[in-house]
Length: 582
Image (cartoon, rainbow, N blue to C red):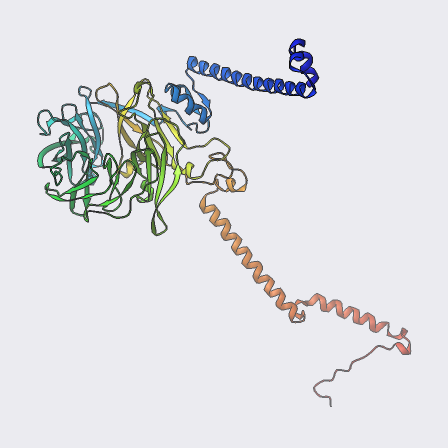
């Protein structure tokens, strides 16, 4: 190799660099190192050119290409548009079929600019109202007016003034958690909170249909809604008169009692009674920004979170039940409680796009253990919502995010069971669905599941798109994921061997096969015990009639041949006496 390099190099350059054997060898080594580095750089540039060609092809054809996780994150940091033309090869979504999972129903409130939307669940009073709606959609527009709509787009209540006054903007809306007692809680930018009771009545009316249609089918339940003011209250000022800014508010029911729980920017939580009287206030965090959000948890507790902690607060005792959980560096953006874990597992969305899961119990004791981390598929933080064994996330830009319009927002549905099984060599199945509404940009959403048994599996989602009036209503269908499996064969890949074959057998079949095996084993066990007992008794129970016949024949043959025996070979005769012998 050294000779080849010297032969290829110019004679003058070699002569100038070589003054001896050692200097020539050093010069050759430097040339080889330069050639190797040049080769590596050429390969890198070839790979870059190939990747750019794939990106160009994807942009022209409208198809996304797969990129390794690290490359995709690096490119997306330089240009947010990369998220529109690429997939994470490690965590490619299982489905991107919008028409299969999102069924468009209607566009509601097309003439108003909606700021908040949420579903209010209704209770079916009797069997005669089975055909009635299971929920209504409640909206508040930019003029702080309340409206209520049925799921067919009909306005049940329009342009109701919530009474916050001129110059005030409604910043929070929360609905009653119970289906028996309906109310709307609204709060404005000055910290004023107002509660309005809702009376919802279903009226049976005949449909306009003729023929032989069944009488039951001709009945339709129409809703009538009336509202009246209940109470108003504000956050109390501090000891020295400092103003406490409202950051979040939610109603909580404890038996027959209803509490209104409000968080402020100084880290305090205030609890109000149903009539608006202040029950008390407790400080739960010292993080900057104070209490960022509240969510109803299991029992009578409330989950609160700040930038770097979360915990559970008791409105009745006005105290934090256990020490808050901490341990992450990026500020917290949103949280969701896994419904299947009875509030023992909390999903945290961080501001840098990471999503982590904390377990708050370990056996019968309390804990704060990091148990899971979602794949990093977005630079924007997620708005979270739990749905049928999935965690639904909508990337949402922060107020100080540069170039917000360049980020493409899609809805992600993360499969918790697949992530619990772990990741292997094969692509994971962590992202069950990635829904794109291009060219529209989802800004917020509200989700509900029908409590009716006959409507099992049906859910509705109301999405508000950026720059558009009204909200679009969809019927959302997504199957419950199977139980988590081991990642021995790869994260989400098909398992091999007899264990995967057993997954296709029903549980009743497995039980039957096990029961038959147990019966056969017990029969063989009893048979072996009897055989051992017969062997220990001399084997007389194994004799039968054919054995005695064969024995008599042999004895008769031996008696007929007795004359041929010598005197010294006389057979031995044993005398058997009878009962009359002496």
